[in-house]
Length: 499
Image (cartoon, rainbow, N blue to C red; front, side, top):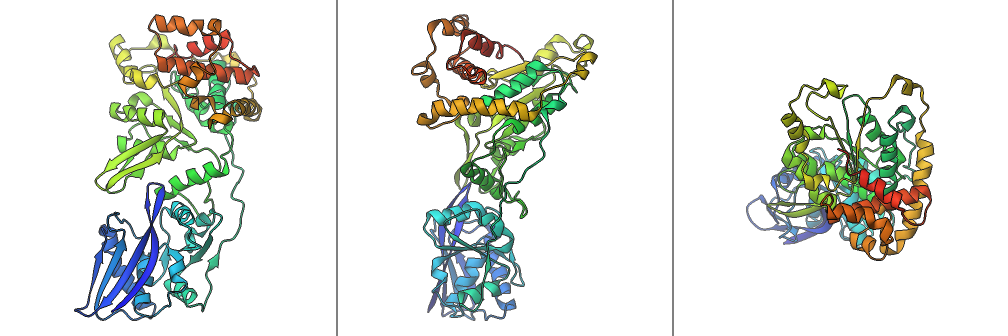
């Protein structure tokens, strides 16, 4: 009996777990038996691995071969284990020594001729290898730039199975990571392109300063989409930790490129208004794939024509808006994806949506039903609501503030908020817990009077009160004040009345 071992990583959502792969060659009729909860793609690995080994000039065992993936209770999916399966077989067949093999994690799909193909989820797999204390990880050469983002672990790339076996036998070298600065300047739309709409422009600035959710309502062509597209340009770049977190999600989704493997700017995701629930929050057979809410993590999720989305799709947003993550239950277990994003909704006031509201031909009941699809609990989570109106021809000649100028004010406001909340573990006003705002950072009684009156009249809930306080703090930060004033609270309250 001959036994060989190799190691790989099983990626579930954006976390990984080490998988031990054992190959046992024993007496018996020739055949390959794969055990350890493999899925259909992994079952097909038997044929790919056998063809790759023989086409690279190695001998395939002419007896019974058992391949076991441990832990056996963990579902194994995809073709990421091909490289580890092949080297485990070669180790059992005494074609390669175990010295380097037992200290290396292997990731990659094999082609029939022995080439190593790129895979999804390399970044979270390498992060898991680092957390597990592994000294070396080998990835497909096409994934090398992505894997090289992780510091503190040796990352090597291979183009073929033959190149890998030569390295394992200390007879060759693998491709090293080429250090590069992946933080590149990107062209961002300028806020100066949007003329007029002072209220809406200020709401976008306020949303950027405090990470508040925003809703824009108005006739088509008025500039709702333009304003939403300019919000990411006002946000600060991602920190190193945030960049890895966001990049890991996009890696699992298979959306990274070799030329730009690191996402350094807040993502802007705008799904179509016909998107399903699964497209928004994630789904799919087996292990659920990330949806739009996760792809927009640390960035902006823009839902244009939000009143056209299905009610289940809209209501599915409530949990990630509140919790900052989405948990998806499937047959093979529950996966959790990060989903802390800024929501921007845009809607027409009615189905016909004329440029002049007086030209509307929709019955009153249809108008109410159109925006009525946006439920109270969903709108209760939107801090800023702005109704946009057509601008005059004279306003077209106005000179609007550029993104760079507005971003300076946003940066100063965020710095003030970050210093205030740093000891509590968060940085923006939108993340401040309600109890903290109502107790330790409770404004004076005269400042709270407008909110108290609104609650007594049943106009706002406790959650809405907390959100008004968060907006009031952001208004104070933008103005450079230490505490919110009664005018800040009143303005925050008026932003909730517009729809």
